Every structure is written in C-alpha cells, then in structure tokens.
Image 1 (spheres, rainbow, N blue to C red):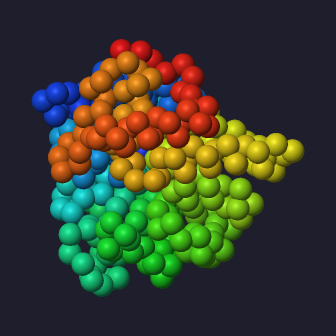
Image 2: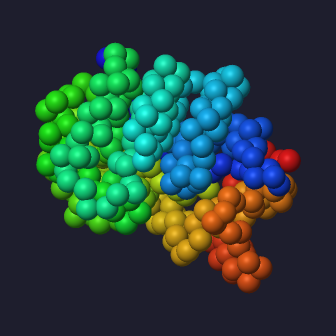
Image 3: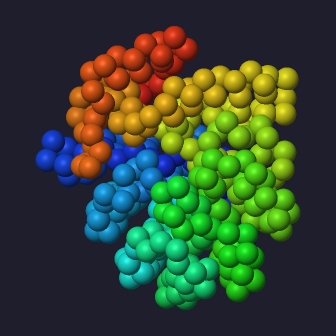
Length: 306
C-alpha cells in the first residue's frame, strides 16, 4: 500500500494576472518553494480561492504542476463541488494524475440537507470515479459550507469504503470536534488534519497526521519543524514561534493578507490580486500587517523573486 501523505500541507494560494486569469508561472514557483520547505500541496482549498475557480482552471493548473515536474504524490487537490459531475470530473482527473489524496468538500449550496444526502454525494463520487480513486479526505468546514461532516457520517463511509476513505480535514476550529475525530477513528488509520498549526502539539500525540493550514503558505519550514520536534526539548518554543505567525494572519482578511506578503517577498505586486468578491488589503490594514510581522521578525527565506 502506498504511504499516505502526512505533515504540513498548504491550501496553496492562487495568483492571478491583472485580467483575473490564473498566473500559472507564479503558481508553479510558489508550489516549488513550498515543496522545497517540506510542505505538501493541498491545491484548491478555501485559501486557494477554489470556489472562485472553474473546473477547467483547476484541471489546467494541476496539469501545469505535473508538467513542471511536481509529482502527484505531493498533491491533495480540493475536488469538492456543488455539482456532483464537476466533483467527479475533478476527482477522476486528480486520481489519474497520481494525487496522494482528494480533499472533498460536501456540496455547500443547499443547507439543512440530511446525512443520507451527504452520504449519497460521497458514495456517488467514489463509485463514479471507480477503480483507482485516490484516497478521499472529508473536508469539515461547517462555518462556510453549513454542511457538517459528522462522526456518524464518517463511520458510515468507512464501513462502505474502508480502502478509499482515508481521513478528514477539520476546519471547524473546535478542538473538541477534532479530538472526537481522533478518539473515534485515528487508531484505525483514519488520518485527521487540524486546520491550524496551533493544534499540532495537542493533536499529534493523539495520532493526528499533521495539519492543512492556510499559514503553511507563509511559514512552511517553521510548521514542519513543529511536526518534527513537538516532543523534543525545543518543542514548546517551536510551537510558540509558529503560533506567533498564525496569530498575525488569522486576524482577518487572511487570503488578501497572505497575498500581500507574498507580493512583498517576491517583488511582484500582482500577487496582491484576488478574484471578486474578495478585495485586496487597504493601505491602513497592509501597514498594520507589515508592522506586526516586523515585530516578530517574520521572513520567507529563499522565496523566488519576480
């Protein structure tokens, strides 16, 4: 059995051109920098602005990464969609590309849907992709989707598809929920990824597989060091250092804030571009962000220029 992806994964930021098209070259460069700093690539996550990308754009960017020599084994593409056929097309393409996993949102437009309906969505996706479906990771982000991934749903899916359902990303921000996932399923090989590195020192002893965190885009090396050294003599200091960075960015406007900082370190102002309805940082917020990062001596060593 192929070893599953673990560690720190970034929901990779998606750069856009001035005409709001994906900037493929800068996307590849950002992914390479992340991979060089020990990060896995959860392309097309929430902080990738995935909900603002078309199916064709996601497939095109995936193909560009593969053509650039980044192996599918480093990728966990987000393949969830409101339309089941779109989710199937994305999941099939990623599976055929050799992706290490699929991070699959539930369909998120209709609210108050039954657990049977959510189960049917995942079941249909797995059945339609068929033999060779990459490992499926359930994406729990109820504050955005309003469609929770419940413990009972996980249990049902594991019972039906024990060799395909591989784990979950818990973006609820609720430690009790993350712990419940770990307590109920981690011992049986279900890989739980908290969505914040701030949970690592608490979650890793309980069997967490790592984290899938927005700020891996900013601090891949520091978060990797927490995962490698949480139980060593420097574990507490490593966690505190990672938490400092996380605290600055999670203050609000996270996507625009991260893109603003990449623009500074790359020297390319176009990195600030976001797709509507998101908006770039205003001047006051940008200066405040820069001051807070200077105060903690933040850096992105080796980030590519241009």
